[in-house]
Length: 253
Image (cartoon, rainbow, N blue to C red; front, side):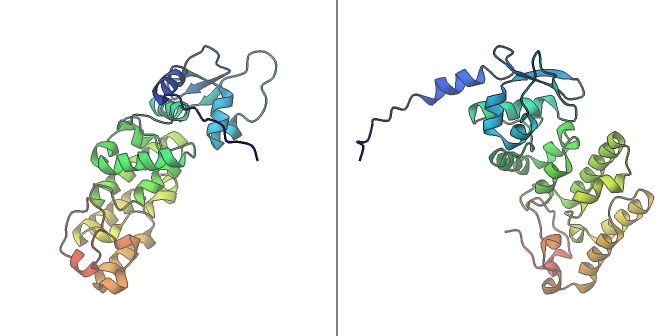
């Protein structure tokens, strides 16, 4: 049995600072990204990205040919969010702002922290350009959260704005763009008058499947918590009280 050797730990701060200096630094860089609608060049290092993130491992898996490799175009990713992801990959830490929260690239730990940040700053985050540019996959964990500090009526409006932007960019109908995420909206939390207004707006501009609105009306008609239990009736942290909530019997946990 070999004797145990001495393990020497250096200071984390200088190591982190040294790696942070390489973020978007063309020196020694071997991959260039063209990011966002502004087509900003962002420089990085293939080996570091590939070993830290499965998304980049797949993206950069093929060996570059001779000569200068072509830049990787990520036109739908906001530049500030992409730089935040890079900083996290290089240093294992990043300071999040409501304009730069990035929930993408399959980074579980970063995604959890981003969701927690948005939960604590829900109303501000919903009004940012970054929210409107989220992918459906990034928006889903937010709409599934019980801890959002926002009322459901405002969340429905935010989802509609998000879907309109996506529809314009993708040249697809609003309802089609919204389909993967609107099922997480908790329409039963809305008062009858709000639900009626939403139903009328939905006729003019389809967003939510009719069946989902019917299910919300069922919760009102049953007026019994046992029949209405489920995520669709569970209050969020920011849900404003309404008279019918006492029938749902589902307090925030």
